[in-house]
Image 1 (spheres, rainbow, N blue to C red):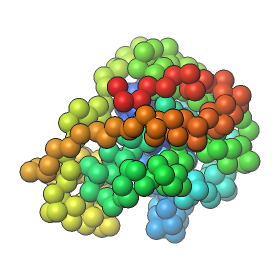
Image 2 (cartoon, rainbow, N blue to C red):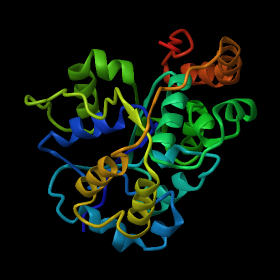
Image 3 (cartoon, rainbow, N blue to C red):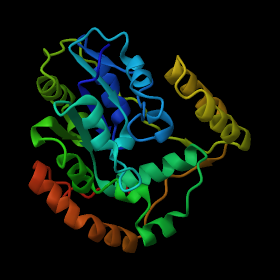
Length: 280
């Protein structure tokens, strides 16, 4: 029975759908369907056991085998994912982590909640409190520190959304090298999941997706079914604008993320602090 030897662990709302598609195009990479199994982060899946998890990789015949669950870097809500991964998959597994401006990431995550019809506090309240998962998931150094307690730094490849967009071929070549597979001459850098219009789900749509998530989230073909249902759930829904922050909120969030971003640069050599790109 095949086991994954790499995982895309996030960050959420950081082009992981595009990254998943690009990786999937390589003939020597097998990725699970659904993209996000969430096995190590959600007890309702973890209790199904290893056999259930590994069944997602039954058809894998490639050198690189992986999945992409962004919930694996959603501490403090979920802190036991790194230990579970090490216990079940061993200490040699590799991790890919893609990041972007944490404030833009948080705004995208908030919009995602609204689009999916999930309950969430007001944005003002979330920024004031700063303990909600969509805020803390942008503390990238903190999220990875939980993994470094169990894995060597060499197990990780960290990239930025900016790199993936501006230099997709070079960025993907670096990932292929990290995964120890040959370059992919047929790489397709089509953009995926690039929403320009935001629609909230109707009451019917919310009920439909809640029913799907509870009963059918991991039944084949999951990704196709889910995308179709999400489109159906938004039919007739209200269009809304991506939220914008006040200047005071931007300053407040920059201060909140500052220490973590400095630590992130020290640990991973990636400078996000000088690239603020908010409200554009």
